[in-house]
Image: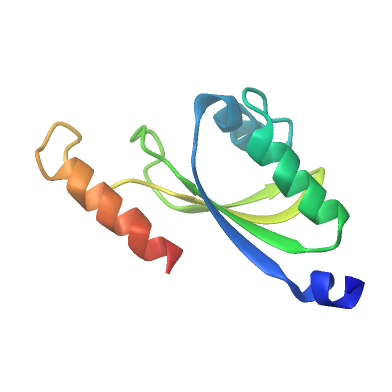
Length: 106
């Protein structure tokens, strides 16, 4: 059973909330706020699985996609920015952002 858990990979597609954004900016895993998802990810890591975090940035502050390496948490993490090249106040920004981030999860 444990061998099977070690090979298991789970993709989490999460919105980059402000409480998690501080951890991403510092590259140090110390999320705050509602702990449900963080505790689940931490528990899976302790069991030997390989979760993958895909963080969708809805703020428009992150101009580019980025690989994130936490200094104290061995999880593959990627931040996916919004629709690059489209003005935030444009009618197309939110639909293009949603489409771009959904395709990144595939």
